[in-house]
Length: 467
Image 1 (cartoon, helix red, strand yellow):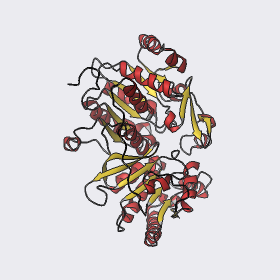
Image 2 (cartoon, one colour):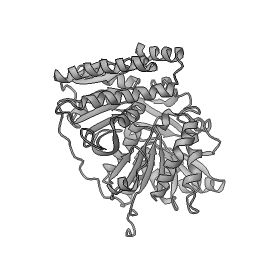
Image 3 (tube, one colour):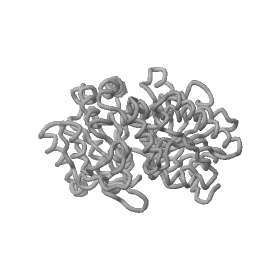
Image 4 (cartoon, helix red, strand yellow):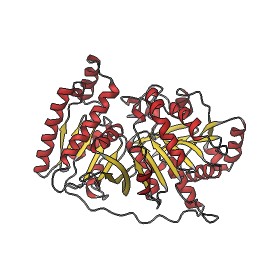
């Protein structure tokens, strides 16, 4: 039993991440607050859970963000049932901080409808669902229900964001989180805005919302004050457990409240990993942010290698493309340079149009081709890990990371050191070396500074000017 004024024993948060990089960011927030965290790549059995008896945050990383509602209806019920059995007071469906989703792909509304009958079976489960998308630590902000995200030195409303309004799968044309998600579900959404949070009226507003019926409630977060207030509201109204939607902003809010309330001591000093000479990297991201990072890497000891994504519409051509890229990457390693195998260098790369044209000409299903690309990146990385002295790797792109990690044979991940917000260094668990014990960083398309690959290679140091 936990003493009064302390956090309860056992897991505090059990989550499913709708993509791998975002899921690792949840571990980052919790682990570096001093709360042991682990993320599995599939539903863990009792033996797998027993390896982490002190875990306070337990997750399952998935690929729902790149899947249609039919897939979600088949695959997510056993996941939510497994999370419910863990008994954590907060069960979370972890979403991207830029709300990547649409009615036909990665539907957050569909996930909510699937989860509620499963996770709300206990009679004392709280009859509301907090929605926390914003996280100031990664420069995401929500004001009066409208979501904003940074790009470079500026902050943009999400429907005007240079990257998100041109996202290749889920372009953002609506910045109001309630309006965006209401396209995906008939479940009601309400709002507790920053004025209520700052004035101390949030509990009254929540009582009014709950009196009107079960609803998901979006919480504004723009600064530390609203972050703490959001976390306090959620924790005080968890009843016998609740289901939440959110980015890692949910964990930031809870941790901020636990610190402010004296429920959690100051975080320990995180470890600083040693630098590594070589960092084999693969990328399936088409974001402008990643393109800038690839350009930096090309000037600082990395060898960019193009992998023709359009070839993935034909299995035979794809195998040739994989073999060619893997051979070039191995040659780079032998020459003392870090290979960076990438399917594109930003949304304007002609490779993006070639893939779209190849999909239009073929009978291939886009989701199956995207999976083939991600798995192919993982297979290339698996070959590179055989090179002597390789102990760290990186994967760029949220959807790519999921498929690549599965292809590598990774079964679980732990966050072991901070690198940049939203991109921790993780330790992989698998059946055998070189995967078991591998240090790996998973970076989402919109995450990280221009020199993120230098930071990963250096183990967290600022890498400007390094070679």
